[in-house]
Length: 108
Length: 113
Image 1 (cartoon, each protein chain N blue to C red):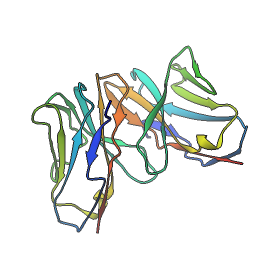
Image 2 (cartoon, rainbow over the protein chains, first blue to last red; image 1 turned 135 degrees about the vertical axis):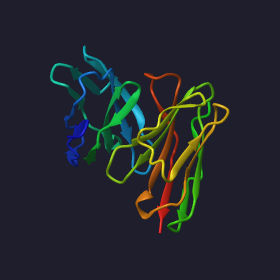
Image 3 (cartoon, chains in turn red, green; image 1 turned 90 degrees about the vertical axis):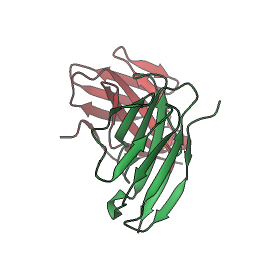
Image 4 (cartoon, rainbow over the protein chains, first blue to last red; image 1 turned 45 degrees about the horizontal axis):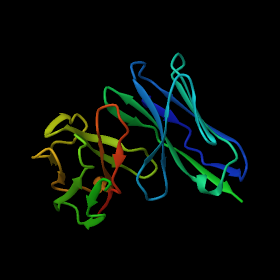
């Protein structure tokens, strides 16, 4: 079993749609959690950190459920520019473990 | 502020040849990471440095890979000899501390023929 698992997709959605990505992790001792975004042939960049209380940044909402070892990312009102791969990332003992990534394609 | 710098951006070599990648982290970042990313996968950690000390190299294939960060600033990752399966993007990242955001460089895309 992979330490961080994501549905690779692709998710094909129309502009304006709401889309949700899920991720599970196996190590209950993991300390911090992130969503990174990676555009085609570019490096990963931090999208947002994920907290147990849930956090929102504009159209993006992230949630963490420690009991279920589950992380989610919700994107509202999708834009063409949201098309990218979204990487679920878990920090365990200072080591970042990346999921496979979920590809989102927003279409006009 | 300058980001993480890596060179070269692209490298094509024949198998059994040596290759080296260079990384200059963001100024003041003590923690430096080397990752390998295969197509369709997330990055996988190869080695982590705290200043000049390699504190996690458990994922580094030590028979052919080596790395150094002699003065605790820039770093070099070497492969000798390269194999076909080493074709990937090699990413360098740095952070101010162990649990802080990691900033990635643009990567070196290696193709081994």
